Image (cartoon, rainbow, N blue to C red; front, side):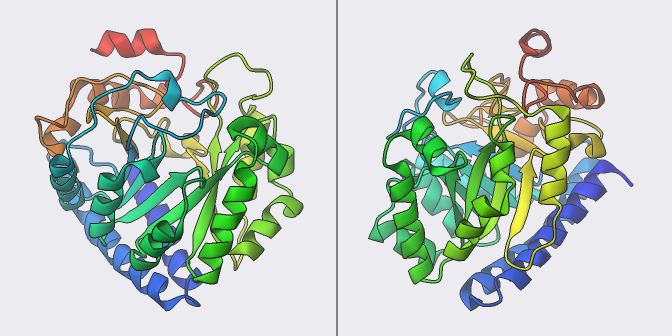
Length: 348
């Protein structure tokens, strides 16, 4: 079985599980049914483009803005230079191009995506796409609760670091309380949400315990994404996953529960023949609009401000990285490209 077939099968299975999981919230279940139907069509579109030599990824990761209201320790976004954001008009057309090409889901990160209204509204308007919003949760108010109530293709993922003291240490005092308050409002309105857990060797023991996750499930969390930690500095309080840790996380996320979906990202890439970046499984759009292989590899030879989505995917840089995917299995932390700056520069 090809890695694309395996990846497509896993995505379709996840969407199908989500429909069942959301049966108790009809509006959300209906939205997921529409997204699931688009996924079946999107897979065919991706295969058609592949026959033409263009690798269209099912997932788009978007750094919606360089702005954020927090100053988290070891933040990859804070390490990047500030840029001029992509124009709202281009965001709308770009998402239309991506959907028509076969993309299935858009992962909205930042900075803080709630500060990028244009991206939030544009993805929400594409109800055939799943919008996963990775938010620090501190800007949630009644208006944002109304937004997620209205746009059920959008799922808020509140970012946590493990136990409350870890979250507050990395993100700021009182952040946990604000996240809990936001979750309480979402639960009151019967709006499903999830959490994004930065996971490394420093916290894998606690975040894979029932005592950690069960309170979130009881609060209404239905999706748990463990984002593998990628070092951005020399802070010894944050450690990347070891090979044994990665295996442990993979086993943990493979559990079958009736109350939530668990995903490790990027997960065990060996089963997909190596790194999934550069269009094999996902690609990254920076806040400025340049197309990059992944958020932790800020190199680009295509600018979406002046080229189509399909045109950008034919980037020589992305093609060169995909050709090396089989050897890109041992990187720094959760990223196979991190620490390979010389290799990436040689492709430009």
